Amino acid sequence: MCSTLLPRRIARAFALAAVSWLVFAGFNLSVHAENRGRKYQPPPPTAAIKVTVLRSTNGKPIPNAAVIFHPIKDGKDSGALELKSDEDGIVKIDVIPIGSTVRLQVIADGWKTYGEDYDIQADKREIVVKMKRPTSQYSLYNNGNQAPSTETTAPKGQSTSAKPSPQTPLPQ
Image 1 (spheres, rainbow, N blue to C red):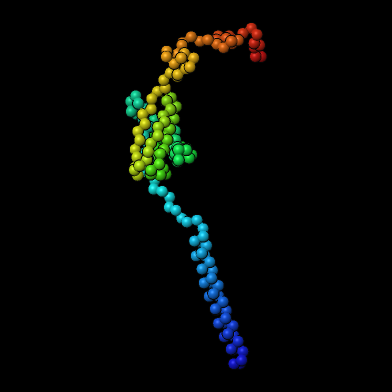
Image 2: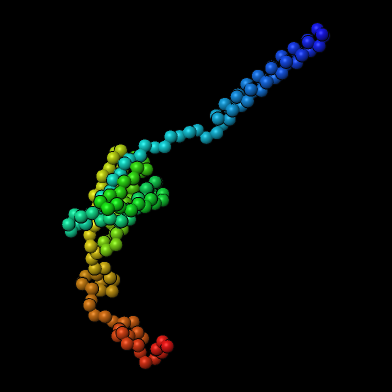
């Protein structure tokens, strides 16, 4: 009985040593693998930006206006983030990094499109946008130094009247 007990003890000791060596080697490999991979870089601190969209005529809020943020990195637009204003004309965002520039664009039905660049230097920024009504468009055809002409001229071969020309067949 003594002769069979000794090999079992040796086998157990050998197995325990092998398992502990594998555990230690596996732990050691995982530590080395972490050092070879990419190092974790925490995200940059971001600013809480609040944009209020108001009418320039009476100061009332404009709901459902599209407020578009274009973060600018190295002089290039790095994407766009679009949010809609709530019933108070307010939009809040907190993903723009501090120290960056953001191009703000506001689009609302019946209002002139607004656009401006803002430097984000603090952890909080409040921006009030007063939307204006659209004005007459600039035209190269009147040399830009006089009011747009009110006469309606049609291109050659087209009529300004609502009546179809005799050459145009009527729909059946």
